[in-house]
Length: 64
Image 1 (cartoon, rainbow, N blue to C red):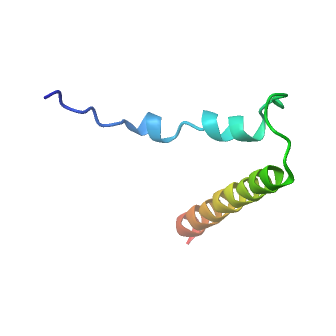
Image 2 (image 1 turned 135 degrees about the vertical axis):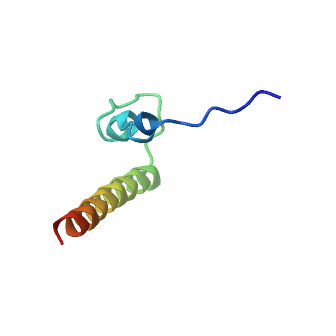
């Protein structure tokens, strides 16, 4: 049985998918639905709030 490779720290800090979620092009084949738009809006807000909270937490720990 092959041994699984453990991810290194560089792989933990890849933010390409995160920024791709915010700055992707509109897909004309994707269905236009108000529920889908609202879901993506809430997801974007929650990601921003999580990153802001983590930034605040890290700065608070570093500066105290």
